Image (cartoon, rainbow, N blue to C red; front, side, top):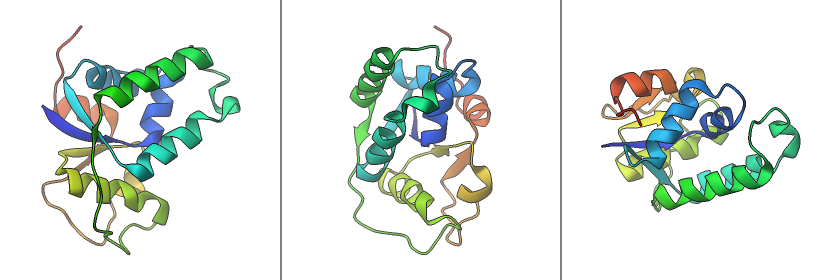
Length: 145
């Protein structure tokens, strides 16, 4: 089973209409086919973004349904403490927590729509892949329902 860090943009895209590959990755996490990891910074980011009602105006899910789905995801996540900051590293400081969480968790991949910034780190971690949701599904095939 692949251990993954789900960037917030993947979670958001999964909750909007036509969630596509992001939704498929989220489903694979909920089914136990991927092991999502979570740390304090990513949890705070998830909660902040999920608390923006305007962002989800086009969501197929109600606020309550999104909350229930988020609770389900949280129950699947493995909590990881990050004890070392790999800084400076990424062009966008606000993305560094993803690398730090992935390294601390020994994750197989960071799944993100922001390849441009997350994959351009000054520090290289050869065993860590940065993938789009589509690439994740291809690299780590999940079983159909």
